[in-house]
Image (cartoon, rainbow over all chains, first blue to last red; front, side):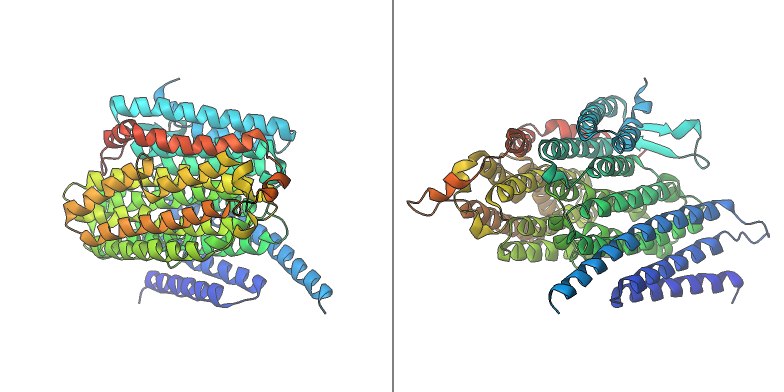
Length: 98
Length: 485
């Protein structure tokens, strides 16, 4: 197995792992982390594709990954805010009905 | 200003207006948003004329040619969809300006600007990575818009976010495969270089899964009937009329360009068709069984998404794919206009009656006959009956099915129409007075005049476009599918 193949398989495996966890886990913060793990898998795959075999990496996939990371950071930010709102609402409900 | 720089207007104008709206007063933000939507509509018309005269209008952003720069281009599909986006934003902004309760707060204005910019950008994007980034901007703006619907909408918004971002990751993987295989993310170039049937098939399959999640195509639809009704009324209208169309357009584009380069595309298209058929039936049946206005309309969207993807198997099966292509786009535009009308009208009814429950709406027809009429007319267009745009689109899909010898799509198109008619009738019936008793109607307050006029005007647009659909058909046929830019 070449290094490239290793990275490709690892990326795909991490993506599947993350997506499955995102679907199965109930806790919101854990789900969010699973989603980030899944995105890590895709990024790994993209970075592996930057290998052109001559030692010099192809900058385009790297630029794509950077953009992808920025997008995921924004998504994570908004998800954390929403998760806090959901949990605050749940706490309020618990106080009303002990 | 040349025609090609016009391509930038629908993308950057709403973005600038949105940014300004964050710091302006509500009144100024509303005025600017309405003006921007009107300018976008005029731009769509001008671009449409340019497309009719000389085909797709390309633009290399900042003068940088691909592969270094980004190529945007407006073809028939882009122009028609930008027109739809302008109409939907205009309608939602007018209603939101008339009553802040329908907007959900000041954040509505900047978020609508961002969403409109992103959605228009997707319509003119020519490479999959630009499409991915804009789709993410759209997702973030839409999720935030859903969250404007009060404390309880946060859970719905978060659920929407998880599904939408998971869908994006699949699409990003498709983008990575496209680049890895062809060395470009530009769709036209990728189509020239694509030669491996398995990899291209994987790209299309990943795009189908990702976009199905984002568009709420059965069986990945369960977030939509939660998220769309949870949002404020103007947002619900925008989400159903416009936001789901962005991911559909990307799906169409990827299949349009890469579909001919793989043997797996035809079976995949059949799978998409079966999912669409299930969506039409399942969404329609569940819409019949809901008891809240907005929930019925949201399930109706789930059903209508089924029609929008039906063009994919038909394009592969019919001898003249152009008919299926144009018909599918028309049915999508018809859905956008009619669904915006329906959600805005339903919001007005629910706000006057103080409840969204069907059995609380008794007597609203006496106070708000025009609002109920808007729901009825919009339902006629969704059901695909003449003289509406929905009929024209459905008729072309019926022709394409006959052409392909696929009678089962025909049965589906007609059966789905009956379901649509049934749940629309149920909503209209709920607004009637109990026999001989008009007391309930007298208690209701009439909404602001704009809130009555806008849904009715949208319903009227469905009828006008249904009577004279030739303009849209001409523009859509001017840039034949697969031709691109």
